[in-house]
Each structure stands twice: as C-alpha cells, then as structure tokens.
View (cartoon, rainbow, N blue to C red):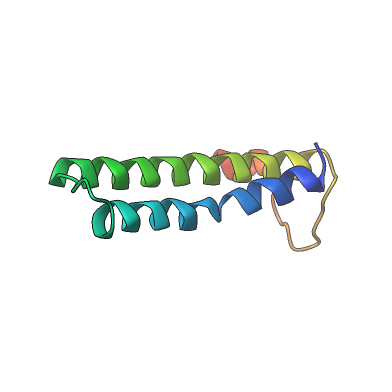
Length: 85
C-alpha cells in the first residue's frame, strides 16, 4: 500500500456527488416518477456506500501509518492505542 492508494480512496469519497446527481435526475427529470420507497432506498444506498468508502479510506490511512509510509510528529498514540479507547 502506498500514498496513491490513499489518494484513490479519498477521491472515491467524491462519488457521492454523482450519486446525488442521479437521485436529483430520478426525482426531478425522470419520466418514470419514483415512489417514496424508491427515493428512500436510493438515499439509504448513498448513505451506505458513503460509509463504506469512508471506512475503506480510513483503513488505508491507518495501514499507511502502521507501515510508516506516512508519519506525523503530531501523532501522540499509535493506531493500536486509538482502536482500544
């Protein structure tokens, strides 16, 4: 793993903007009108995907710190310490 993996994971966080654009189309411009359940399912899906992307990004970040690929003098505890508090 390297910093490019982290950059990729961070970039994927912006996919939520495309997801929202698709929902806007579905709600506002799509000839087939969504039901309330359709809209809620779309929103739940976006929320779940966003959580998964964030979790992956954070895991990559933690791994890079553990592997000393990135370091910071401001880190006062190791990742293992922060996971147990």
